[in-house]
Length: 126
Image 1 (cartoon, rainbow, N blue to C red):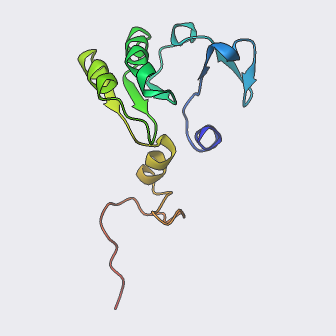
Image 2: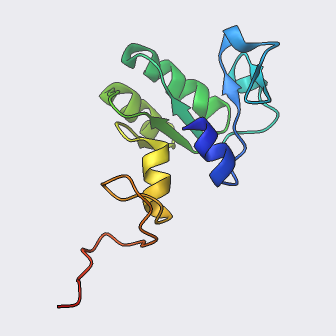
């Protein structure tokens, strides 16, 4: 996902994990917390255990984020409610790469580039 977003979007990606302080990921510095970032993030994408997510929602709100996005296969209704209560948009069980690709017409359910941005089934000429 990270290399895709770095190469196919205008997003600035920040790597946040206390173990990454002083290290780089894909050429970018690691940060110890959301509060250490040089700017407020628009989206905080979480690859965390469900029990960690309510605190992450609070951290995201404190850092000025607009959205908490919890990756595919991860669920926490408590985190979604916490994020919503704090004024964030909240998404769970979705992959940023898949949704970005779908929105920009780069991904079909078969996994290939269709060049079509539509949720409607395409009709073929008879």
